[in-house]
Image (cartoon, rainbow, N blue to C red):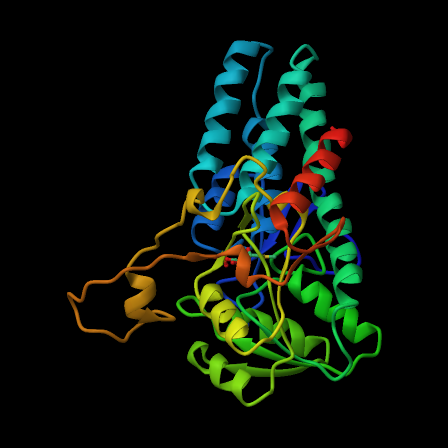
Length: 353
Ligand SMILES: CSC[C@@H](O)[C@@H](O)C(=O)COP(=O)(O)O
């Protein structure tokens, strides 16, 4: 473990994570060598946030084959593929999960000729690289995006995109942290983010620990705050960005983008390039996760709606590209026309393969 607490980490042969469902009331650390614990943690949002899910899947796939005995490669392939499938079925929207699974698969098949223990080592190294690269990408996103934050800005953010949701630092929150470290006096308005309250529980907790001025609002207050002139920019994260810039993020992001456009306020998306789905032409193709009715009819386990009420609970929405001012990545700030400029990033990515 490094000197600073991370939401997910690899510590002397064990995977360790903060159970985010318990925050901010309790800081519970879970240590495991069982990949099934990670599958359950991702499904239940104990580990959450697109980059964090991808990193967890990398380590989880390694743990899933770590105890494989013998040298029967055909059997090993079957176990490996079934573990990958289990991770792929946890949550459908964040592309970082599938990106990480693809990276683990590539390393597995490229090294299948090796002795099984060496192959396992290669997989662990790849998981560690995914984690290390995410931390570097977040740091760079922070530096790139902080340039867009004016001094004394009122910033509105949604859901949680901080160190809890990533390898470290965060994406949208990483930008806020960097601007703050640069001495900018900022105020951050945090949407509570129903149904699971990632804003109220997690983002406020992170920001207040850093001493940043934090103002919690309920999700239905944002348009009014914009009208009052309190918001200079909106910054959110992303679970999947399509080639044309359409962006899936936590449900409620689309409302914010519409309100921001109406009030002429810049609307920024911050994400690593691992959140860009270079195979998806537009946001219409992005699979949107639907979650159980319990998350709507209850708040923190307490029932608030009548028994038998029907619910609809999409976990994400898609913000169309024309509502987005810029997409801030580790490789730089992408402005419209997104189609053309994301294509350029794709070419750059290919040359790194
Ligand atoms: C850096 S995290 C970016 C996104 O994953 C985040 O904004 C978000 O929508 C998370 O949703 P969650 O359902 O909490 O995993």
